[in-house]
Image (tube, rainbow, N blue to C red):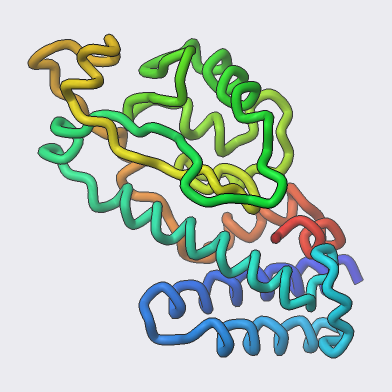
Length: 224
């Protein structure tokens, strides 16, 4: 039973990635994406007619919308990271984490998250008094990893750093970075390899990491 449940969870994760890739590329609309996710949920034993509107219900439209929006944000920011080149990075060396989307009940713990992530990497390439850090700073991965014990994070060095987050990136120009002391005049800035090539494919490692982290029961509860 455990292997079946793990296999089912892996299948659902892979389908989420697949439909979101199609959605981002414009080859599928949101209605079709939700239909395909519901088909998979039905195959693994969920009653897809039981939409009670609750976010914790895997078949609820609210939840499916959240899953798709989270993945859409991830895909967009992964593409943004991969589009960076030396010229772009030197002209805009840093990111500013800021709220770009409103939420009914926005998180109030971003200062704590930022502080914990910064402390965990010795504030390398990051400011303590504002949410600005070099694109190469390890603080971004620390945020995605939930430094400080935050468990709602997504494991990526790019937004969204937490489920249902309205926080996103704005590029910071070189002049501002120099004034803030993040980079010296004439100093070159570059991205580490792992930030240039984030993976969106549902690789076996991605799936195994998600199952190990969440377990099947919590996977359906937390992937939203």
